[in-house]
Image 1: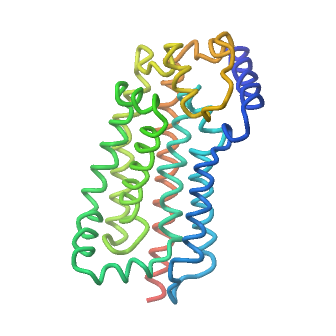
Image 2 (image 1 turned 90 degrees about the vertical axis):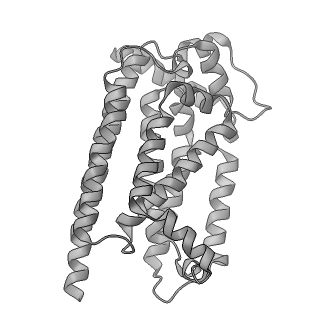
Amino acid sequence: MEDEREKVNSLIEILLDELHVSSVWNGGILLLAFFTLILYFFILPTGKNHTWWKSIIFIIGVFVAYMAIGSPLNIVARIQFSTHIIQLILFLLVAPPLLIIGFKTEIIHKALKFPIAKKIANILTKPYVAFILFFTFLTMLHVPAIFDAARMDIYTNYFYMFGLLFIAILYWIPIVTDICFERKQKLLYVGLSIFALIPVSLFLMFSTEGMYETYSDLGVFVDALEACFPPDEEPLPASFYESLLPSKPVQLQHVGGQILLGGGIVVFLITMLLVQVFEKRKATKK
């Protein structure tokens, strides 16, 4: 098992070396990241309460999001399902709270002066709506038919991922901000989130067969991998792709389920600790 893992890792290194830099480091996503930062620093108004450390946190959030879907991690995630789960944890559980904490809220305060904007915001920021949407879509993404369909087309894949990011931001707003919850409610919300991760994690951990064609069928695997390459990227030999195809996709699903549950618990426990610390600090200042 260890020898096979080392062999696959070596092949992945060869693949990353062979591919053009624009395939390994997604230029389109990089431009989007730069555009986001330009918009943030030069277009969005800065409120009186916005501090420099919030800007640093926002930059880190953009960096984490880019590393999740625009770095070599995205290529490896199309080869190993367990890496896909790491990608999701970074993109949906780590980046969103950083983006929210660091965001310049002055533009939001101005937008909420319009009644229609306020109504939409009230609907979108209802905690139970965001909670249900987030865990429903996270689970649905791992329904085999939906997962495979999303992986076969790069635009569909990014539609799913950025749609999930938007829902993840809505999910994190009640935790990170004070507009919905007090301390005890935040802790309950985060605690329930751990239980909400269990169904999809167990679904993966106790699967008995390779559920995703993108990791078990050579033709689909190649199409899904090449979907994230530029059109002018020269195809690699079929024998090389065959060597990359996971020989034990079920094991990777099990590992993915363990990473999702374990990583989610770690993120949520750290979140609960930070909520306790910052809420008590706020109470002391009052």
